[in-house]
Amino acid sequence: MTAKEMILAQMSACHNDENYWFAPVKNVLAGLTEKQALEKDESNNSIMQIVIHLIFWNERYLNRFLSIPHPKFDGENKETFEPSSLGKEQIDWEFAKDKLNIVLSNFHQAVKEADDDKLNSTAFKDRPG
Image (cartoon, rainbow, N blue to C red):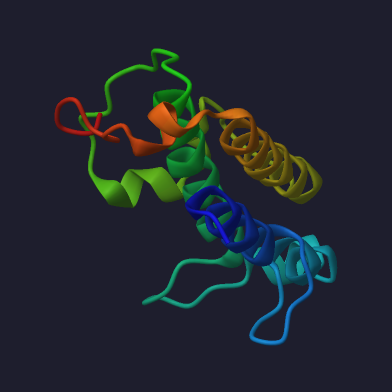
């Protein structure tokens, strides 16, 4: 198995491919209602907040991988759990699930289409923004 094949297999396992170790995020989220996704206690983030966080960082890393500029992020990581980190006041559950699926699918496709030079290049030319 090549490094590229291994990366793609791991991306699929985490995103949408059934495997023996854990349920992929797409399947887990599909079974949750918006009410369940919004539940939280004082010390933990809700599932919705975690999904927003995953969208924020995966989209930024995808853009970096594709050399697409994105605004510098000078905030604190805790801000990436809120809809405002995606430029929204509010996000509904269906939008959040669809957006995460799109970002993860696009990232998988970008890796699939990348040549070895791209895959072997450094992820950071400077500090992540």
